[in-house]
Length: 50
Image 1: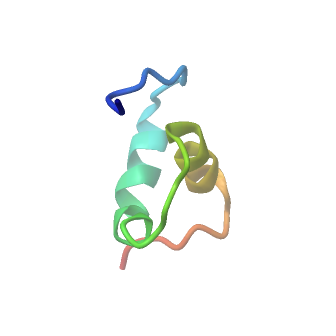
Image 2: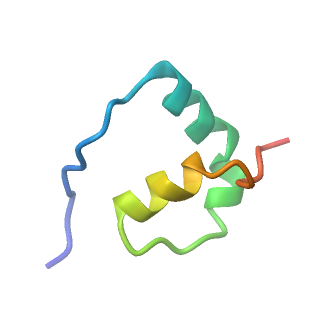
């Protein structure tokens, strides 16, 4: 059964801003895990929300 998973990360204000900026683009993606998502968010080519 799938459910919430704890991911070890430093939730900095910069990371939160990056997640907010890429929210729209992330909704069109499929991520295998939360770690995959954070790796994608950290990439400089992740498209920011306009």
